[in-house]
Length: 259
Image (cartoon, rainbow, N blue to C red; front, side):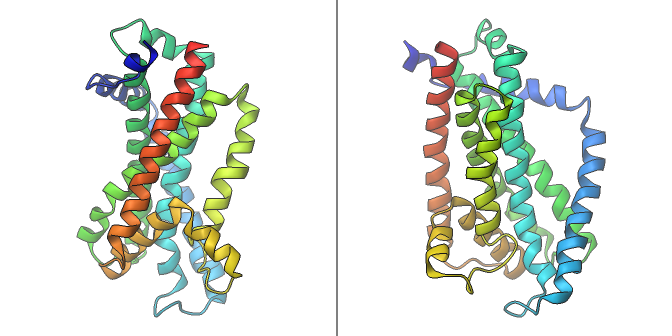
């Protein structure tokens, strides 16, 4: 019975649309804040710290860090939406219960939430790419647009990881563990802010096990060089990890809602 109820359908788009309608009430303020935040990130890291860093494989540090910021912002945006946002809908506002009284399965609700996480990731990453283009750090608009499907996968993946935690969390405080143990290691060791070639072999090996590393390699390769070495391998790791985490998110939410 639970397994049947977890099978999503196209009604998941109704859940996505519900989130979109709610988002329309505050997106202007959020975009303004995010735009200013992205400019500060680039100025502080790309140009402030970048003055102390030599060129990396023929590109400036600002060019190197730009794609890493695009991917990491997608990660942060989808993570916040699927942890604090989903927990609020699940346990505080009882939105999930209200949706389940409609002709929606729990699978529809989970998939709708994940689709919205992917959408939020695209919005955040697009704002960051606009900032990069204003600073002349994106050579081709078409190559920049080509990374959006990868960004959507990043949103699905971290949305899934967030929903796993939301299904397990006894309170909002629990998410400090999620950010410390899941998000921060990926942020620091997925080549978002610095190359790993000078680090110990163990850390470089650890970095290759992180799905975000493969997303960063794809996005950096497309935005800067217009090509990605071992593209299919990186895409396979990213897509495979996303599917596994989506299944885990479905199980975690179903156990929480059915308990």
